[in-house]
Length: 378
Image (tube, rainbow, N blue to C red; front, side):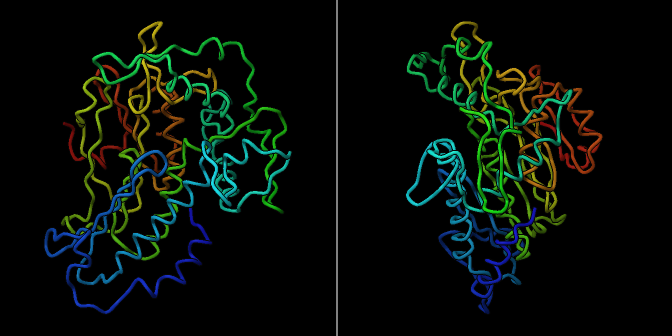
């Protein structure tokens, strides 16, 4: 997923990113010496897309990049898209998803970058269906609002010994309601970058793939500079670029989190995988944002099935590996909402896509090509 406007921006910025300095610590605030004279430069970006991003560069003697300039470019990109895709807040001088959902006119002119983000997902959310029904739908906003409010409900009991809230299930305002969630009623006009809805009460929500989309924009930019890096967005979206000079095989090794809600303050893992450059690792799981239903004691997580308007999915988590982080975000959510058998059949039929499922009984199911990425199970 290449972004022309970012390439143009980089043509202007590249001269400032290189220098002729002899090899030394590029920046002592961010970089430490690793294996074989490789410097590992790392920065955290806090609060974007309701999560934390971490970016690591792996610099050898041949690399003389201006680390601070690169870090600033990434932060500016995160900030810009965080505002554009935000459905909960408005910003001075910014027309964003909030503006769309609270527009005062039938048609709204929006920034080209936001237009392209919406257009991208409307095209690709049709990639995966079950019985011709969507599993990823950005028009699900009215339903997602209900579940968001349910997790934030003042009636939630947080006084127990466990860290998770116990909340009323919002069945009364979901069951038997016909919500305006048909994405075919979202009208985009390429001529003037405008958006309009054909049905009253519609709202869009790009939260289901925003991290993957902005991560792909950032990594496209880094790939054009031939930099070795690892970008981690909240431990659920990870992408590697270039060869890892810290390892003789050039690969990046990452851990897959065990998706359990008990004792979730202590992170544990179920596998280590080896990731080559240009591969995104994206996880969808039921343990990320959830509450316990006060009526039935069941877990109600944040991945809502458009077919039922309720949380769905057979497994506790699914992790997929693919070369496009934006598509990987869409596919992981959709595959999570399938049965494991449906998901496995889809992955096996899709070239370049691999997946591993962690089930509620602790068992693991993986696609046939996943073994190529597996380092070891724990």
